[in-house]
Structures are given as C-alpha cells and as structure tokens.
Image 1: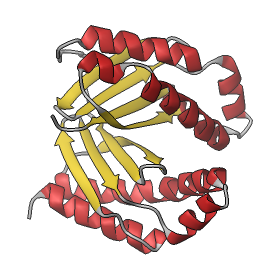
Image 2: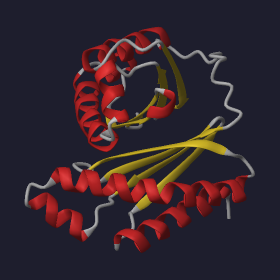
Image 3: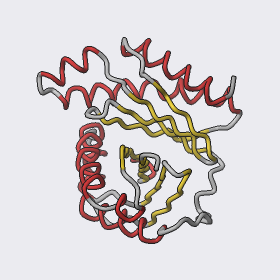
Image 4: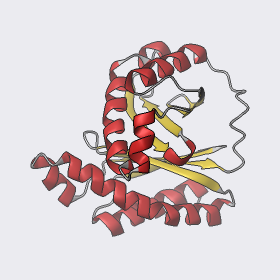
Length: 224
C-alpha cells in the first residue's frame, strides 16, 4: 500500500471518528515541500442540519475548532509514516462543494528559492497580489508552484494589516480567519486565475499562519 493511500485511509477514519461521517474520498498529493490532502463529499449530519437552518457561521467556527485540535495528531502520523517533518499545516473547506483541504509545508521547505517556472507564472502572481490588495494589502512576497495540471499552490508573506494584527492580539483570531476566508475565496473565484491559466477552477482554499504573517492558497482545477 502506497504512502498516499495509507494517509488517505487514515484521514478518512479520523474524520469519521470525530465528525460522525467520513468523506467519499481523500486524494493525497506529495510534492516537496508540500503534502496536499483534497477531501471530497464531506459534511456531517449535524453540520448539514445547521446549514439548513442558515447557521453557516456556527459550522465554520466549529470546524475551525475541531480541525485545529486534530492537526497535531495528523502531523505526528505523517511524520512517522513519511519521515518528513511538516512544520506548518493549513486547512480550509468549502461547504457548498462539501470539500476540504489539509496541507502541510515541510520544515526544510527552502521557500526562499523561487526556482519553479510555469506558463504565465508572473501573470498569476500579479493577479494574486491584486486580489490580496482588495481584501487586505499587497503582499510583501508571493511565490507560486504548479504542482501538477490540476493543482496550483501559492504562499504569501506579509499580508496582515494593522487592524487585523490588533484583532489577533486581542483574541479574535478565529472570527477574523472565518471572515477572511469568505472574502478571499469569493474574490478568487470571481476574478481571473482560471482565465489566465485557461483552466476551469473547481475549488479554492485559503488559510493563514498569523504568527508568521503567512498565507497559503491552493487552487484545484478540473482535468482537461
């Protein structure tokens, strides 16, 4: 059994044990320095009931709490299996698509060396910066990788504005993250990354490490 299949099975069981329902699939991509887990058709009966009552914010905040508590366990399992230390894990979900993403960035990530080129890379990063500026501010640095034909990853550094930093310091990190997710994803879905690349966007996920002022974006596209 491959490492990817073992991780997929583990994630499915972990979600089933903690949410009462597992996903239809958990597709794992390992491409240094990233491990990406794309989870599809995943929503618990309780979450579904809350969404039908219009309580999406409750679902968002509950998932944020649950996943933050599960990340250390996921991190330890993947380290034992792959012998690779993924020092930062990010996660996000799309309740409309019933999808979710968990992503790890390796400790020896060497992100300072942006040596990957793909077609229209500069245009993509410029568009990411423009959209980031609409929601918060122009990033101090943006790097992107085309992992394969279907997956684009971008890391932005230096994106928090003063009021966000103050909210984090005052203990409002969780509602800030929930709000930023909604605004950013709406902007990225409506404004052009798919047009630049000539691909159909099927999912976009975003998360932040507020301590290091770093944001991760993951775009999934449909196969041609």
